[in-house]
Length: 342
Image (tube, rainbow, N blue to C red; front, side, top):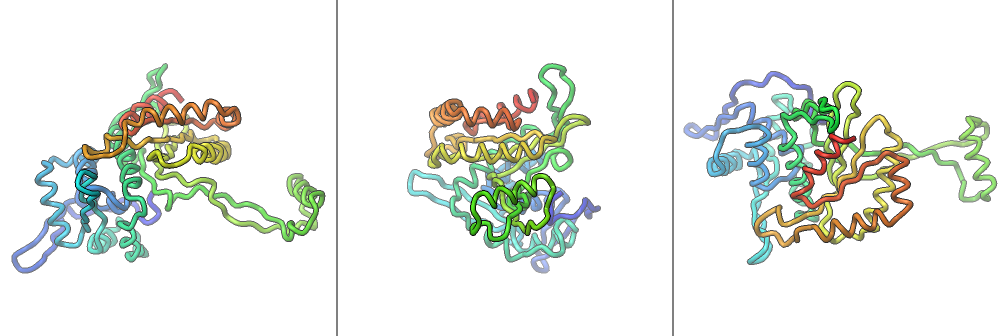
């Protein structure tokens, strides 16, 4: 469940918002669900929001009508829209964030917590790397709308492993709200001691003998994905955690290798879950004006460096971590295959 979100409560069939004596806006439960989704994902393009409305929430509406409806939502401060333009031949699109009135409405209907900080919504459209964020959201949406209302079955036995239903067994998680952290013990003034004293204190802790050991600690983040998708498994099947790492081709592959080791720590500490590091290569499928390539060359380079590093291969095997590296347009198919296999 969303930390800022309460349990599912009965929502009125229709909500009427009045602008003046003549103008009003009727909202249904699906409208509220869409607003909850927009708040949860922080920022989406208009096209992505339409994909979600049509395929995830099964809203029967044309793209033209949906655009007009979004415009209406903007007038009532339910949504904030902004245009993005990257030169004459570059990307051009409209992106959307939740509006202040929508926050009030969601709180009133117990879909957000009363303590929700409204001021933070004004940071949602101030992403440093907008294209990276939106490509990440496309990877998330592709998985959600492809898997929703389907059963993922074992590749051999054909038995259902994941009965998928959005917000019941399939969840979209912001890494800011679901951090991978651990509490790490520290020892006072260790930097002043020689290595023998340090190892003696560590040994006392490891054997349970804490006499004279002054222990304190701090919480550290093991790794922070670009986004998280969680799938609840059936009965004895492990829950699956898909950790999305969006790659635009500018990050050194060595950085991804470092993340493999961090995800291996995470997988090793949580053997009851299936952890997948899903490296998604941004490609031209994100839009018809995209400057990204087909992602094939980048995919091959990353896979080769992973395979050529014996330490990486060893840690993957030891930890049970699964790794996927695919261009955006091919990613869902590979994730599906991995879920059926493992």
